[in-house]
Amino acid sequence: QVQLVESGGGLVQPGGSLRLSCAASGSIFRIGDMGWYRRAQDKERESVAIITRGGNPNYSDSVKGRFTISRDNAKNTVYLQMNSLKPEDTAVYYCNAKVFKADYWGQGTQVTVSS
Image (cartoon, rainbow, N blue to C red):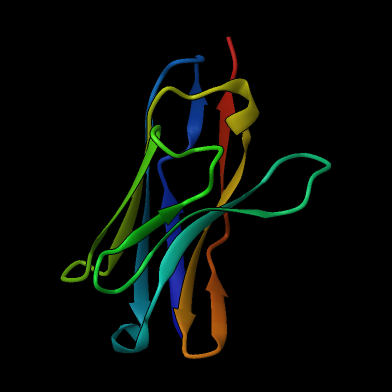
């Protein structure tokens, strides 16, 4: 079992920045890819950014060039640095960890971009 706890969400003005963190505990030695997903109101959940255990990132087109995912395996933590935020980035952001074929999810953290 893997437990994920996100932090760092909040309210920010357009053009601002936020950094999300996700700390993993439990069977952490089995974690492979980690990533961030989001679900906006009345929309389906979508992938934002994924990072392999070796540190290779992959981004959705909508955030490429603005968001940066990173990972500290020693601290069992994954980060999402979000810059140049737009109102359309408003959503609940979820941390994800993959252990073989199983998916584990955090509880989600709200990000609201509004003036």
